[in-house]
Image (cartoon, rainbow, N blue to C red; front, side, top):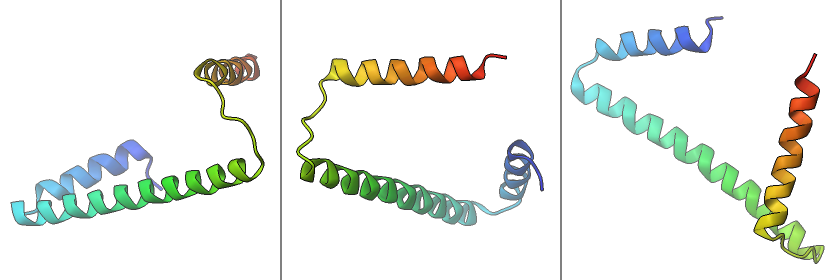
Length: 82
């Protein structure tokens, strides 16, 4: 199987062979796939938000969110060290 870079290059080469109206169709399809992925992520987020609301978990402050992100990144960096 080709790696992502080769797949993109091959796809671009194929797109270059298509007439403009077909390229527009491909673009519409890519937009559809992007929207579908985004819609699923949003649905997943809403499901989690509903569970959090049911559990009466207080919302996090921006500072708490930032601290959680920092802690996660620090842990990833520690785990990546040889």
